[in-house]
Image 1 (cartoon, rainbow, N blue to C red):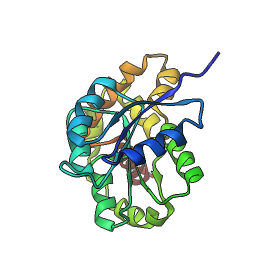
Image 2: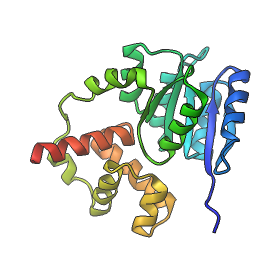
Image 3: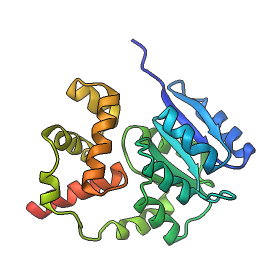
Length: 217
């Protein structure tokens, strides 16, 4: 039985970079670029309609920048994994991206093989970070959990179950398989539980859940 390909959307205002990324991703049989956008405004409706597994988003675009695009996508209910690909390793950019719902932050000057490996890791549900910025984020994520157990109690049993799987780094596809439900159903549950907890991304949910478990032990 052949594995289903992972769908990827590229958002960058440089055609040459999109072309290079496409060629890199084409080296992997199980990855498929299903859409490209050259601006945030163009990308948002495409992300909502196509619901790709992964969106690779440039931070420094003309007009609507990557952070504004990211915020809008999350506000529109996009649950795809979103990884920023950028030249900036500035602390505030990293923290801004992650706190607004990014699932990873990679630098454009990364070695192509490493970049490809990180993209594949992102698709398995892992947070991906270029080595240079891991420390920046580590300190930012050590802030205390701001949600309460009361908020956790507002989740349905199914949502709580899915949140536990998210905390273990499972993708929607793997969660669907574990629970014997469809990908679409998982996405709806993820959207609801993020809204109930006031979180913007799966990564924030995973970090919060781990902090909750740590507080209990």
